[in-house]
Length: 327
Image (cartoon, rainbow, N blue to C red; front, side, top):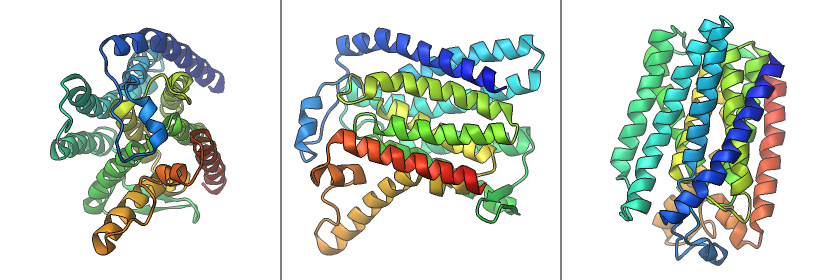
């Protein structure tokens, strides 16, 4: 099966690169450019106008690669695995669509507010609820949740599991969204996290997870070729919400959402930095960090973008290896 996952990853990677070559010039023509904050790092001002909404490259890649994989699995009579791929694809597209609407309103319709936060959260909530219902009612998953260090499962009462699972999805999508602020950061960190989860899928012989994860990894790595510093395109909310949805969906599918606290520590810290900054400023009128999210604090402390990306990625890689050791 590893050989098949490798083929799907490479195929997605190639499709993503080809789409990048096609889509980026189109985004430039449409003048779908990045809008930088005046109070942000001065080095970011030169990024003004860089094409964004690049997450559509990842979405289209996933549609093509997973549809192709689905048809191939059907031809090999692996019907059960094939049928479990499409709902995962639809959920991912759903999260990406919420981000796309937000990006479209801000960048194409020039509505600086984009999609109102309450509508954005409502959209994410609806998709989250739909996915949890799919797991519990369609796949008939139980509510067992793995505790990595103890290497045991705990049975969460369903009335607690449902809100817990929904919170995991909403928190993860927003955490990945906050991590997307430096060239290549969110895509690099997400690719490593998804790789870790896909390897767990292989270890536990859950082919739909390892195959789906491989398609996503290939798509993200292909996109990363255009997203590394200096970025030719940004993923926007279209990509970051999609990746957050993928990570949380796979983690819940594996019954290992608690593992995200470890392997997704960088997005967790990015989120905590924003919360701390807001609370501290409201109480003292001063900033706890030079700027939030956390990656901007390090930038303003003198770190180059590439240094932040490399260190955050290495930390994520180490934590992912630890995560694989303790499951």
